[in-house]
Length: 269
Image (tube, helix red, strand yellow):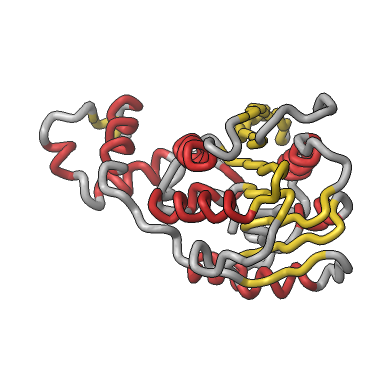
């Protein structure tokens, strides 16, 4: 499970997409005096402030978790639907994730939302054993083709199929915002229950606008609040990756966090 819904490649939602959402349920808002006008070309122009208010209002009604069928359909249509394997952005993010680990090696690690195993392959080099889970059977089958001796790839629908066992590292990369707030609280508590004494959790999430049940910031704050009694130290590293695509410099933001009970012995660089 990866990436914000309908934002493949983390591209911002186009104004055209914004208009489609407005016309599929918010005509009354426009008619009641919202900041909208017609351009000389006949296209509807909506103010940025109005769009922000509309997105905020849409979150009043809580959304359910994104179903496993969504991700299965994505991977069946394209085995690498978000371009993990060739994305400079993702490769830099993966390296930053590894740099966030406070130890050189872990005994038993758990990765939730592993997708086709691109990050799993890198984590495997730092772990004696790694259990990597994803909701998509197709993604898991592709991940297994890497033949990583110390990694077990398994299909699981969380929070129902949360694994048994104890782990000294739990990694949740770009997966938290796919859960409803209720399911996320359950997942967070089960992560706490499965964490070994002295273990740590690594969270990574996109910070831009999405159509997911939660934003990256909302999901990380809720998760951290649930685990705070056990893991009071929240070390946050906000990373902004600057990529030059042709002649355009694009900024894509994500946030890395390490949740732990105490400061790591070595400084992370």
